[in-house]
Length: 356
Ligand SMILES: Nc1ncnc2c1ncn2[C@@H]1O[C@H](COP(=O)(O)OP(=O)(O)O)[C@@H](O)[C@H]1O
Ligand SMILES: [Mg+2]
Image (tube, rainbow, N blue to C red; front, side, top):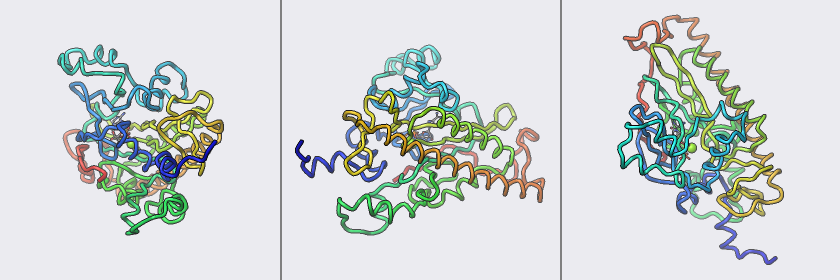
């Protein structure tokens, strides 16, 4: 087989996941229309549905990996993952569940061919705070870092090399294995939030009990992923805590499956390894060594989760020490539902800052 012409080759391979995702946005495989509240750190286009915004509509064409992933979860193909990913619904199920909360036009607009419908895990909480941590190494955009480092032109042939050596330290995600891409305490500026990941994580809560629950949920995600035999590229742990009926509630789920890999039963749009070893995303036949690619990203994902859990555990130790030194520092929200605890951070989840 002839070597592909250079321009074709460059169109099909990407030095980073984010670069591939930007191509997906350009090619219409991701939506870009912004919607406040739920799109910080994401690609946009997510629309809350229902009186309590209890269901989110996310753009994902029928053949996209994420749409197929959720269909498989509903069909029972990944029982280990069921408890750690958001519940999902068909358009018909959304119509049934929401009933007259949807007007006729909105009901008719629901479309499985273009969207997925997932449970909004923040909808039944007040005073909530959210955090979106992207798991894995090498999740920084080439373009952002190019601007960051003020390089005028980069040789395409050394992109991957420079990325590995020169760029990831900007956000630290190579060493850390995770980075913050959105959250109540995040700025919405990706490179900044990446660099500030540890401190944004630590601001998530002052309450050691929240950290106990959060770490348990994270461990659950890690163990479920380990049992599932899937690889996850650029998936996120999305966490929330807030108040429900005067009680503190904590949840964390694995989200964002645009680039999941199932080597035994490949998704229709599985990534396939490029000649230089970076994943080729967005279509094409699955390569014979999809197993190797899956293992690589699976191991990176599990290592990233371990690192996030370790960092969260360190935060919990600090918050426990602070609470012991100053017991009034943390006051259970259930003890005084009328009153804001003195140290509670601003409770809005409506930070509309976006990544650019
Ligand atoms: N199940 C969910 N419940 C609540 N918020 C969610 C949920 N899924 C996604 N979000 C919100 O939408 C944002 C983007 O979601 P994500 O699936 O990562 O989309 P993208 O593919 O655009 O990155 C998340 O950072 C989070 O704020
Ligand atoms: Mg995302």
